[in-house]
Structures are given as C-alpha cells and as structure tokens.
Image 1 (tube, one colour):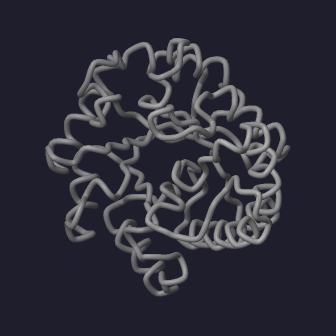
Image 2 (cartoon, rainbow, N blue to C red):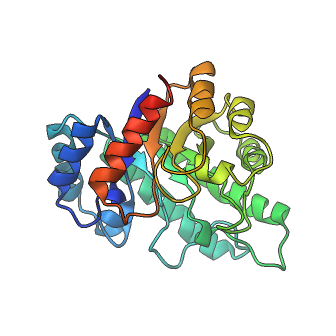
Length: 270
C-alpha cells in the first residue's frame, strides 16, 4: 500500500518541516492543494513548481497529484448553464492539469463542492450533462500531460451534486475517457446506505484514488468508522493506487494527525 498525506495538513509550517514529518511517519507521497502554493494556478511560477518538487524529492517523497482543485478561487463552476463560464472553468482545469504534470503528479481529485452545486431550477441530470461537456473538453490536456481526473462523490452535507458513488460512475460513463475515473473517500461514503466496503468492491474497476479519514473530520481510525473492513477490501480488489490521508479538523496538530493516522491504517491491516 502507498500512503500519502494532503499538504494543507501542515498548516503554516515551513515546507521542509512538513515533508520531514511525513517521511518520518512513513508516508511516501504528498497530495497538493493548489491554494497552498498560490491564490490561483497562474501565480505559481515555473521556478516555484521546480523548487517544490525538489524539496519533496530531498525527503524521498513523490508529489502524487492535486485536490481541492477550485477551493479558494472565484469565477469558476462545473455545472452552470452559462457556456462562457464553463469555458473559463475548462481553461482553469487545463491549467491545473499542467500544474499537476509540472509537479510530477498523475491524478487530480475533483471535489470542490461549492463550485459544482446546482440551483433548484436545474435537475441533477442537467447538471451532469453540463459537467460532462466541460470535462470532455479537458480530456485532450489530460492525455497530453498523462494526468487523470478522479471524480469524487461527496455527502449531502457538502452539497447536492454527486452525493453517491453510483452518480459519479454515471458521470464518468458520460465522459467516456480512461483519463476520467473514480475517487472514493471514507467520510463521504459513510453517508451512503451501502456499507463502505461494498461501495469499494462495486466500483473497483474504475477506482484510481482513495482518501482515508473519518466522518468526524479527523484521520482514519480517529473516529467511529471501523477501518479494518475498508482496508481488507482494498487488499481484496488489489487496489494499487495511493491511500491519501485527508483531514478537515487540524486542531490536534500535524504531528499527532500524521502519526496516529498511519498507525491506525497499519493496525487495520495487521
């Protein structure tokens, strides 16, 4: 199993301090939130990209890709009827794809609920069509950069678009590209009626990325969800992608979050 940590977990720590902790705790991958490098992708210079990769490599770490793709941005949206706004968003996704490539990453997790929720005047199916049309236009850049988008279903507390893995799968089928596949997240899956391990098994053919955490917004094993059946299923389906720890409550501090998350993941497989 390959373990990564999302870099926003380090907060305002110096980059090197966060990387040293990650390596010491047993992580070998770093998943990057673009807003930690710049307010918009255009502000992240070529030299800054090279320097970030170099620092990661100095600690034996690999940049695995991006998440929070549209977080802390404005003027972008995935599902709107406004074709001009979707075109602007498409262009931003292409720029993100190039950032991912420049950092050496291979996957971009498409969550960003605020930039994909649809209004009451629109149906979920209409939102799906708009999103599929936009993402289809990003596929050539994904192919050129050897990057894949991992579509992330999110629970209803986050918004109204793609609340179930089955809906994310339908969107992926509509796009029809091997470069757009599925991401699954424990916190999000815990809102579905099916057991988490069954969702994983049912979608194993398109699963390319995985977030380990708990509905309490802390790391895996730091809440009520039993991690053992989850990791047993990941082994059963022979999942060979990254297991990346994503937390949303940083109050315990990076040291405890990284250390306990790793210990709990390993214990779930012992």
